[in-house]
Length: 137
Image (cartoon, rainbow, N blue to C red; front, side, top):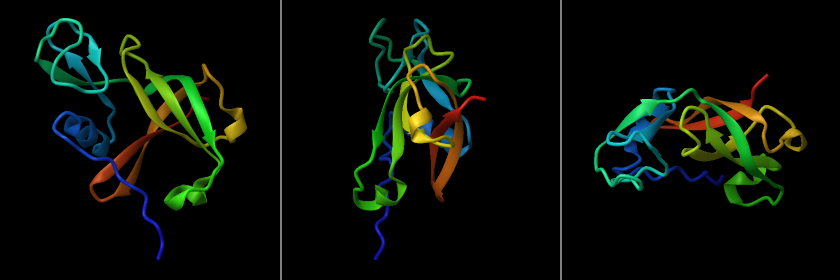
């Protein structure tokens, strides 16, 4: 029996994000009151306390803020080691939106803080698409 990787849990706050990813778009929640981006998605703006928001398409590029290289084989992820999980500050969001995702398509020891990356979409299940990142050439 092979292990299956866990999938994201979609809730009412994150559903628009996952729906956009399924359509191969990267979107972020933006306050309709003051324009601040909210991440993680939430019902109320931390700045102006507005309950109104919209989901806007963002460029899909960003900069690695921090990262970790996973070498320990654990469960369903054992086949992927070593792999990079990074905190990426997304362009076009005034630095308020960071996403944690995998960085692929390069050797793990090439990854650096400040590296520019761009999104691609991995259709991991019929109803789930994961945004992942690769270095910008």
